Amino acid sequence: MADASRAIAEFGDKAKLYAGGAELLLLLRNGLLDAEVLVDLKKIERLHSVSFEIGLLRIGACVTHRELADHPLLRQHAPALAYAESKVANIRVRNQGTLGGNLAFNDPHSDPGTVLLVHDSTVVIGNDKGERRIGLDEFFADMYATALEASDLLLEIEVPRLPVGMTSAYQRLHRYQRPTLGVAAAVRLVHEKIAEARLAVGCVGPKAQRLAELEAKLAGVTLADSRKIIADEKKYLREILRPVDDLLGSAEYKLYMTGVMLGDALEEASQGSGS
Ligand SMILES: Cc1cc2nc3c(=O)[nH]c(=O)nc-3n(C[C@H](O)[C@H](O)[C@H](O)COP(=O)(O)OP(=O)(O)OC[C@H]3O[C@@H](n4cnc5c(N)ncnc54)[C@H](O)[C@@H]3O)c2cc1C
Image (cartoon, rainbow, N blue to C red):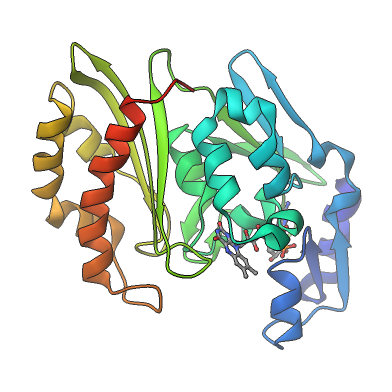
């Protein structure tokens, strides 16, 4: 890990970190990026491990989407994440692309980050001087931008299990391979009312976002009433998600579907078997 960090520090802009290459090779091939040195992160053994201990799932940055979709620890402790991973692109990209590459690239039209936000996930970043942890919400700085600095590597993603009694779901809308909209929800019901809800939305604007203000407004209401509350929060959703028109859908369409799918995802989460 220290060698890789030193290599990118030494070669500067001429060097690029390389994991699955699903994005990087496309950028190089299309002349959008230039690199003389590729630093292959797949050689670092630690980045391939998946483990679970004391309520925390640890995923190495170089674990592929396909491995995660099928991994028994994910299916048991974070089923919505396993489902989101199974929906990424196509079998070729899932075989090649890694979770670390997906988060580090931070393309707005991505799946796993949205579910990871609902789990209050943290990322472990390292360089030749040491390691640090930051929340995923802070890691996602903006469209294609993260908190990674020049000689940093994304090492691990730490995914806490959801609180006892809380179950989750991920729903995705797509016309092409990349999603137009991704919605993650987790909910705990008590006597058919929402005791606690977590919501995150991806693909609508520059980056995936948790919806903390809306979550607070849903406490104590039924699932049916939650749909009305969500429908009335269009102004808040527009402000926080900053929807943009793009090839995958208009801003208005994405915003409308966000409201519909937040309600659907909460309902599906409430029927879940737990995560
Ligand atoms: C056709 C196509 C369809 C796709 N559809 C979807 C989709 O439906 N949903 C979705 O979520 N994603 C989708 N993707 C994105 C895909 O998930 C990512 O391409 C993949 O996960 C990137 O991982 P990688 O290991 O290949 O990264 P690479 O291409 O190797 O790297 C991508 C970028 O991240 C940097 N990087 C990689 N690993 C690290 C690390 N550990 N630390 C620091 N920097 C790092 C690289 O330097 C590079 O800048 C699609 C991609 C393609 C090409």
